[in-house]
Length: 518
Ligand SMILES: [Ca+2]
Ligand SMILES: [Ca+2]
Ligand SMILES: [Ca+2]
Image (tube, rainbow, N blue to C red; front, side, top):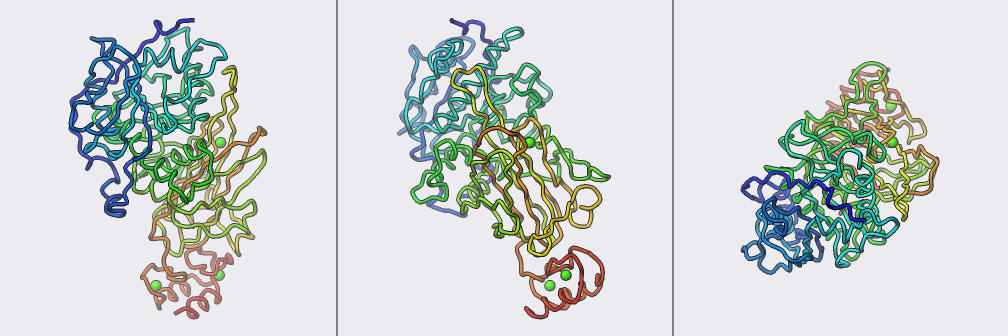
């Protein structure tokens, strides 16, 4: 069945754009931290699927004669081909020698979407599987295009997205998918509705956003998932793709903390590192009420416009490079987690996993993000999607007591943000806490549904200001009379900021603990 002629393919609007690596968020900090060891995406293969120019249905190829692409092997998979300015700009951000952070990506396979949909994705072919990647090195697929089969043909849109998710899961690939341009513009199901990749919007928020349509698989999922700089979504998307290439290079290093994970699990850890490493500034919110009985509770894990936040390759790289920390099934047995880290866990029905975070003074932020893939059946007639939730509680006495932080109970401990993230439809949950009092916090991940095992990835970052000297509750950098004064001031209360030994009370034991280490 040939269905491609029904497709409405839109190149995101072409805009001449200045490329500057300085625009790539966190990249300068990454280089400053790693120097010559900064990853470049070397060894990572990239697929670039392009919608041809409206004036020439064969114009899908980047202009490889440009100096940005010297030394790059760009295989044009469809003939005939002609040069597309759009493809050239996308390529500059995705793997340009000077204009992309993935300057070390040298092997690229470029497709014309009209061919790719039929020959590779194989929409409308029943149980025939999508083709495997053109090369085993491929880890990133860039989709800077929008498409829909249109009203009444949503079944093909759903099939396309299922096939893309299937490919990602089978091949260990992360697809980055552009949202539409323009604030309030219409969303397209292809490929932004994917569960297993990333839907990308703009730092200036001039992109389509909202929830997946009623005709989509699992309607009501929040999109986009991440935002990045660029003058059009077509160029924000490859910036995220380039960042992913750097993280894949790290993930595939011999002896890396990700060693031993399957290709699929690595791709999902790359995804969660990008999500957890993203910047959530003061304007970011996942809409948890900040007062009342539901203070800190949300069923909408993402910011409605910003998704998980703004790309930061430096923090994302720190997360994926940290020691793997899979938490513990018993809260008291969980060791204290580091400032940044990741997990990759096969999670079964009714299972729970706990992580413990000890912060020693008022801590600006603690962010914890999980994601998991949907699993598409090989006949494409069905899929399974797990439901997993996050909750954070205050831990007392070595986590033998966990205090709820929902509602007013959280006011004394948490300045703002959310303490639970419990969407019934999304495959991302986010805890974003601000201004935590000193003490210990336990993140609880719970599998809610009763389905089979699924690989869950977690990533986190806690502001380094939270990791000072134990007992330095005034954050002066020293154990001193200021700390003792604060404890004495709150003596006999349950004020969490002064409960140094975390037994639930401000008492003489807290003074003793400070004096002991002074
Ligand atoms: Ca959930
Ligand atoms: Ca102090
Ligand atoms: Ca105490």
